Image 1 (cartoon, rainbow, N blue to C red):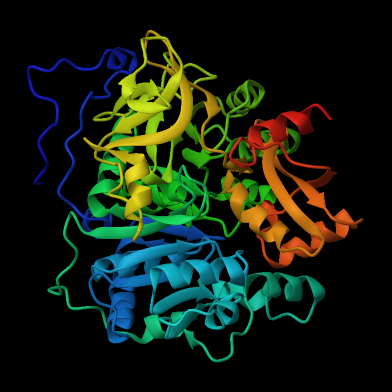
Image 2: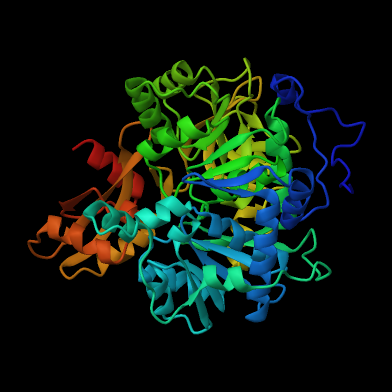
Length: 567
C-alpha cells in the first residue's frame, strides 16, 4: 500500500498532548493513497461473505454490496455521469443510499448529500448552487426534487425503501390492515414520472472493472454547512480528506477488530458525521453497518436483540433515551464497547447512565464539516476527561489565537479561538473563494470560530462560540436563514434568531421579532413550516419593541440572547 510520508520530521518532537493519548495511539498517521471506493474493494476482497449492511433483518454481504455498486455505476454512467459531475443524493439511511454513494464515487463523480426532509425552497437553493444533473431521491420526496427550480437537473431516480426489506416484511406491507398501510406510507410512495432506481440497478450489468476511477486528490463530496459565517455553502472534501480522517479515527480507537465490529447507523448519512463513521470507517474495518431510516428507540432496541452493536456513534439525546429504555425493558447493550458522542455537549449524567447500562465507554469528540469532520477526541481509556472535547487527533495540530487577529497566538492557558491543521482539513467552499479565505489561513490553518481553553495536558474545553450557529438535536441551524424567512412575513419588520438552553446540553431556536401590528405569533410559527425544516422552526417567537444594534446598525444577537434569558 502506498502511503504519504509523515508531516512531522524525525527531529520534530511529538506534541505534548500526545502523552495523554490512549495506549497504542500514534502521534502521526500515514495516509494511504487510496480513494473512498478503494475501501469497499479491499473489504470485499477480505470479507466477501461478511454482512456489510443490515436493514430490518435483511443483510447484504460485502461481495453483494460491491456487485450492486458496480451495477449502479453503470446506471449512472449510462445517464452521462462523468468524472467531476455532481450527483445529488436525497435519501434517508437505507442500503440504496450506501450503494448510490459508492457508485457515484466509483465513476470519479462527486456526491452531494441532502436532507430529504428539507423544504423545496431549501433544496432548490442548494441544487442551483451545485448544478447536479442527476439526483437519486427517496420516492416520497422524488416529486418534490423533480419539481425544483433547478435548470441543470435532468433526471431523478426514485428509491423505494421497502425494496430493501426482507421478503416477509415486504409481503406484510401489502396486507389490507391499517398498521400495514401506515408502515407502507412511511417507507414508500409512488413517484409518477420518475425512473425506479431499484429496478435500474437490478437490471444493469456491472461496470467494466477497467473503467478508470477517481484519484486520491479528486473531490469526493460536497457537504453543505453554514461554516463559520452563517449562510449555507458546500464544503469541498477530497478523497484524501476522507481517507485521512478514516485513518485517524480508526487509529484513535485501540482494539477495533477488523471483520468483527457492528456499527449502528443511527446518524443520518447525509451529515458529515454519518458519512465519515458509517459510510467510510465502517467499510475500512469490514464492519457490519446496521441501518435505521430514522432514530427510533424501539427499532434500535429490537435490532440490538438481533445483532448487538459493538461501536455506536451518536449524539447525546440518543444515548439518554436508549439508556433509559434499555434499563426499563431489560435490553442487553453490554456488547457496546465504545460510543462516540458529537455535535453537542455530552452531559455528565448521560455519560454515567450510558456507561452503567452498557459497561462500555462513551467519549466526546469535536469536529466540523470543513474538517471531514473530526479533529479532536477524548482518549478511549482512563485518561479521558468528561466535560472536554479531548485532544487533537493524530497528525492534527492546533493553535489558540486572538479572535480579532488570528496571526497572534494566545499565551498558554488563555482563552482564544481554536485553529486546526491536518490532512482532513478541506480545500475550500464550492465556488466561494472569498468565504474560503475568511476561514482557511496560510499554512492550511482552519478557523473554527469556537473560543476554547486548553489545559496543561492539551485537553480542549469549548467555552464560547464566535460563530452564532445554533445546535439543536445535533443539527446546525443558521440564524440568518431563519431570520430571512421571518422578515418575509407580512407585519414583521425585523428579526433576530438565537439559541437558548434547551436541556440535555442542546439548544432551542428562539426568535425575537419587531412587529408593525398585532400578530398571532403561534400562527406565524406554523406558517414557517412551509419554508423551513421542522428543527429550524423557532420553538418560541417573542415580540419586542426593537433589537439591540451596533453603531453601524448590525443586530447584536448576543445581546438579544441575554435579554431573552433575562426574561
